[in-house]
Image (cartoon, rainbow, N blue to C red; front, side, top):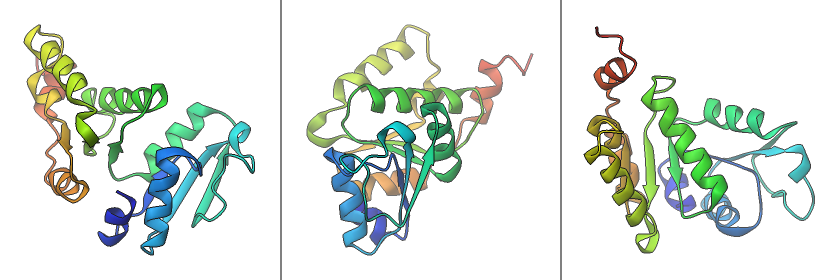
Length: 170
C-alpha cells in the first residue's frame, strides 16, 4: 500500500509509528520515494514506537487532537486490517461522512478477506434500516491497493442522503 501511494504521487498520513503493519506501510512509501507524514500522540513519541525516518512528524498532546489533525491533512482514508484503533478511526470517519462533516473517500484494503464479515454486518444494518444504502456505498473496498485507490478516486459523496439523514430536506 505504501509503495502504491508513493507511485501514485500521494502522501501517506498516519499515526507515526515504526512498528506493525502501518510501520511497514510507511517504510514502503518511503522506500518508493514517497512523502510520509506521521501524527503521533505525545505519550507514544518514544524511540521504541515513533518512526525516525518520516518526511515530517507532528506531535499532539491527546489522541483526539491527533485524529483531528490526521483528518485535516488527509484527502481520503484507507483502513488496513487492524484492531480497536483502526475500527475507531474507520467508524468515526464514516460517521463524519454520514453527517456531512467531510466528503472524502473512505476505503478498506481487504487483505485476505479481513473485512468481509464487517461488510456483511454493514449490509445487515442497511437491510434492517439502520444505515442508508447510500451511506454504505461510501466505503470503497478491494484487495488490491491500486484498484482500491482507483475506486476511491471515483468517490461520489451522497449529499442527498446526508440531508435526508439529517432531516434537512423536510
